[in-house]
Image 1: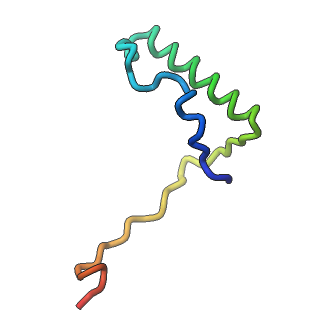
Image 2 (image 1 turned 30 degrees about the horizontal axis):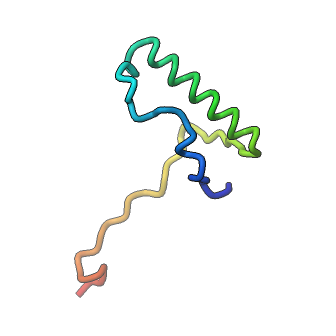
Amino acid sequence: MGEFDESNLEQSGNWTGDSGDNHSVAGRARVRAQLQSDIEAFLQGGGTIQEVGTAFQADPLRKVGTGFNGRTA
């Protein structure tokens, strides 16, 4: 998987909620349409999407050591 390209984030849709009605049916439809457009542009630019299983988990949490700079006494 390649690195995330942040260069085109500003070109992406208006996800900040400036429209004020993102929770209405019409607002959600606009968000879905923008998401679909963004996905299509990503794929046309050579991006790939990988499906992961529903049982996928990130690395388990590690217990934080109690010491200076992570060193134990």
